[in-house]
Structures are given as structure tokens and as C-alpha cells.
Length: 463
Image 1 (cartoon, rainbow, N blue to C red):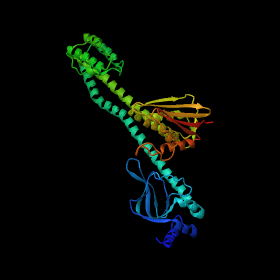
Image 2 (cartoon, rainbow, N blue to C red):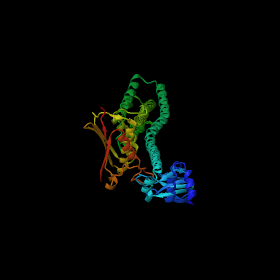
Image 3 (cartoon, one colour):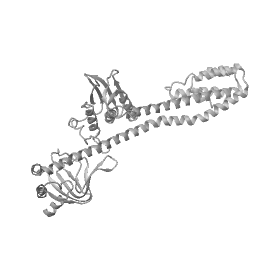
Image 4 (tube, rainbow, N blue to C red):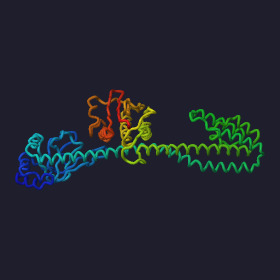
């Protein structure tokens, strides 16, 4: 494109039009005009940026792939500036820069950057402002995405965690109706038998033995089968239907206790009595199962409420970090169990409070513990400790995974740097952790070798 036409386009450029004409002319003289077609990639992820690109027309964008397909995170149109900027550290973009409409650009190579700063001060100032705006936008966008990804992982784990007790409660609830109907039928049969007081007392003694509690859950299936067979044989010997056998086998009722009852109650009333006792035991077992399951659901909801600090106003406050760490471990419990990982908590009882945001600190613990669980092998170990140390609250998250290579340790807190595969990590989790810890006036350190990786967070004690 002829230089006069390029200069005219720069004079109409939204970002650079206010620069002196001689500075725009310098850009034209040292620039490289280039048209791009739709689908062209101007810079690939991981490759160093070599060009400052003044977008004259069209549209291009950075795309990121988190494992669910490519997604646009930032775009530039005619009138914008992208690529290498003055005073930037010249890092690689976080994703491919793809042309989405036919695009014309004027490129300034990095070899001319020092001269541009010297010869074009107004353009340089404009570009520095554009660079800062771009950095804020990308960081804000990616931080938001990382939070959503983390929330999605936690939500998936919580859904799995809630499903188990919810399903147990539903199964027990469905079982209540037929057992209740059986209990009512047996009660009517007992009433029709018009038993004497001594017989009713004998039945009640068996019922009390049944209600003394279920057998220990640790019993093996073989032991339970043997009990059920023994009771079933007794019922058959006394011409009683086998239906009550499974329920009675789950209790402390013995064959000797059944013999005592049979001496006082025989025939049809004996069968009705055993049906009524067994149904009563089953009802209480089902009710206990519902109570246990719903209590677990309540505990999980309370843990999530504590983890998100939903009932506390945003902003700094006095924070006891121990409940937040416990709630975080509870919320991540499904992930730990999926790997059969052993998570050990050792939180000092006299731990002082810190000044800050409970929700933000919980995000720190969530990232560190989640990463530790990712790092360990099946049946691995994660230890979380918290203690007071010289006016600081120190939290350590230690795992026995393979460790972080020495050459990678200094980069783990860099934005977009990750050792995980595509879709498994954005490289922003530890960057967010570092910034949140610093916002609380704290520090975070890493020590890693094969078999032991420790992240150490140090926060100032509330004065």
C-alpha cells in the first residue's frame, strides 16, 4: 500500500490519530503493511511476539482451549493496537491470535522498538496505556474464568457427594410404606388373637431385645448370612413363614430368645408376633438410615455455606481460618475418596485470627488442596497443618506426589503457566492464590522434591 494512503489511514486510526503527523509518518516509514485472510494465525500460543500490530481494519482475537473447544477471550478491531508493546517483557500470548475478518495491519518489528520509543513519544505513551488496559482485561477475564472452572469442579464434586446420602434417604423412604403396611397388618392379627397379658409381655420382651440396637455394621456378609439361616431354620421348625428372618437377623435377637417366646405364644399368634416385631425393627432401621442420610446432607450444605462465606458481608473482617479449611476439605471430599487419598488435618487449637476475607482465603485453601489431590497417586497422602509462628499464622499443604521439577518451581506462580494437560489447568490457580495471599499482607512459598511438595502460606496475625 502506498505510503500516503497508509498515513491517511493512520490519521483516522482511533487509537493513534491524535499523535503528531511526523510520528505517524515514522510508523509508515518503518512499518510493514500486511493483509490477513480469515483463519490466519498471526501469533501462536507459546511463541514470542515479534510484532507491534496496528489494526487498520478487520478483526482478530485470542482464543484459548480449556479442553472444551476454542473460546475467544479478547479481540481487536480496526482502530485498536495489539501484539508487542513498548516496555513490555515480550512474553508469549496465552493463546492463538486468529483473524476472524479480512484484516489489514501495519506491523512494527521488535528491532525498531527502541527507536520507536525515542522518535515517537506520543505514540509510545498511547501504546503503553493500551498495553495496561489489555493486561487488566486479560487478567480479569482469565481470573473470572478460573473461578468459574474451580466452581464447576467443586459443584461436580458436591453433586456427587450429595447424591450418595440423597439416594440413601430416597431408598429408605420408599421402603417405609410397605414395611408400615406390614406392621399394621401384623398388629391387626395380634389384636384379633386376644392374647393374655403374659403372652403380650413375652412379645414385648422380644421387641425390646430387637430395639436394643442393630448389629455392628462391621459384620461380614458371611456372618450375617449364617444368622439369617439360623433364624430361618428356627422359623421353619415352628411352621412360621420366612419373611421376618432378614429383619430379625439384623438385630440382637437370638434363637434362645425365640425359644422363650415360643413357650408362651404358639401357632398363628406366634407368626403375627414375629411379623410385628420384625416390621417394627425394620421401620426403626429405615428411619435411622433416613436420619443419617439427611444429617449428612445438612452437614454438606453447612460446609458449602461456610466455604462460600455466603452469610458474611464482603470485605475485611476477623477470620478464624480453621472452619474454612475444614469446610474446604469437606467440599473436596469426593475427589479425595475417588483417589483413595488420605487427607489429614492438624490445626492448632490456639490459632489466632487474621484480618481479611474468609471467602477469598477459602479460595486459597481450595486451590492448594485441589492441586495437592491432583498431584498424589492413588492412596496418596495430603497433610494440612496450621500453626502460629512469630506473629504469623502459617498454613502448609503438603502432598507426597512426584514433586515439581526444579526448573519449573520458579514459574508455578506465573500467569498462564501450567504443567497440566490441555483442559486440566489454566495456569491461573496459583497466580490467583499468590495475589489473594499478597492482598492479605501474606507470603506464599514452595518447597518441592520427589515425594514431598509443600506450599507454605504465611499471614499476619490480627492485632
